[in-house]
Image (cartoon, rainbow, N blue to C red; front, side):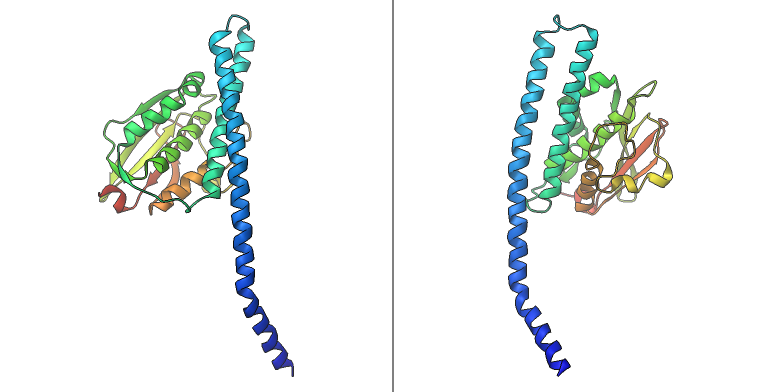
Length: 253
């Protein structure tokens, strides 16, 4: 009797599975739609905040004293950080949903474009950025590479915030038939015991700097999407060196 009941319960559970699966998929779709609407609204507000701040900085610098201008620059800087957080949350929410067209991309050119987009942040940090001219061409989705470099450069800029001589270096080294890229900084570095956990979602090594703990998670997922890996070493500039590699298909068109 008990065996029959067990079979009946198991049968009922199996019969219910398609319904439960459809309910779960419906919930996921609803969450994605809500997330898309929310991030769209947030990005619009942040864009307006950055735009108005830029107008004040460019057209009304004579109205504010040195401290006022400094505070306005911090507002602009943090608005930019919030915009990056929103982009990263979009990446987390919609990972794997979009097509991933690839094309030949020059990492040095892409890095220069990323830095140009964040020129004000670089200027405020007074950081010297060195980009190697000998980076190999990659066969990769440009948006993915942009987001990877954007997160790693943003992380490095925050790391050198209190450095006596803020410097960031983007270079690579050959390994076997591929390459290892790295972005290193002159900051205080990251202890070996913390180096793996900083890639976990919502984990932040330095609580004194702004951020959501999402950027390095996004960076890792982008690298792993291309059969690569990302890790941290001691850098030649005294701080951390973020290394990343890709699978062989990224180096062959």
